[in-house]
Image 1 (cartoon, helix red, strand yellow):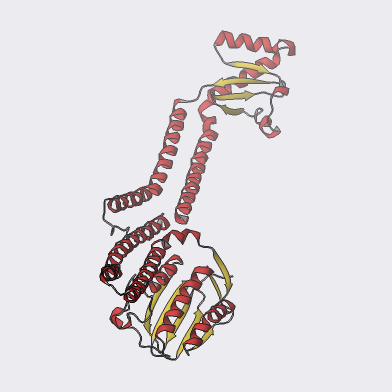
Image 2 (cartoon, one colour):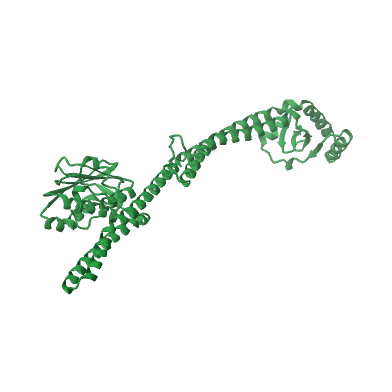
Length: 429
């Protein structure tokens, strides 16, 4: 939008310059009207001489009589009624006199030494050529303004048409419809926002479909177990066996509750994106506190957690949700590490990178693009954590997306296991 404001301002300035140029031309032409009224100036000079020969008290009546007899629009004026600078009053004594202009046309002011301070005023009709020039200048002015506005607004109209067409396609069900941005567009921010909105909607719909599919698939096992347990309990005569069956059924119900709670928590996660509260804070105490919070879990698992945080580094994020993402990764590393986990935080002035590495089995390269998808679990990692449903890393990816960042996974060069990297935009304190 900034580019649009700049171009509109530029067009206004250009229009003002052109208007000034046209006014200059008009003014130059107005100054040349003396040549168009040569005989009127001669006539006014003669009348002024005749009026000067009359007594002062009779001069006004004398000029009125001449005006009526000869059909001239001439009148006698008192000197104190003329409010013009002295330089212009001096022009009334010249041979051509002083020619002024108003909305009706021109009028000639003429006097001589004998008439001073009084003067004669002769109304002059505007020449037809001058009227034609005025109309032409007015037409050219408005034509120029329209041309400049068309030049500026036509690209905007084209880009709005592209935006409208993409919105229609997206509304009709083509969820892949996006706007190909152009570096010359005025509304690049609007186009990028539309693309980001379309991507989020597309991702949300895909997640909802995957959620429904996974839930319907994963819930079948505990439901089947409950059905078999119920049938067995009804057929069993031994009360102790019935109690054992009911205990197993209770475990199945607990599993279903945990599963439903996790799925519903993830399904409602997007509703919290508009509640983000971004703050700026020093990275060192922030990440040290996160490490201290999760340290008991590492201690119980006989794992060592180390950290390397670049000093004097500030982060700008929703501190609650960023902590949720980081602790999810640390908890995930704790589940798969063999002996050590390392968290490194570095920045380059433009972005901040949070690396969380472990010495565990790592993740197969062919699955690196899948690990942040909801409900994905590597076959070799399934059931490693009793209540894992493949949503921890999906939540991490969603939180990073809220911060307009990027989450990725690779192999650690330091510890040899998995290396998760969160890249966030950097903002100064």
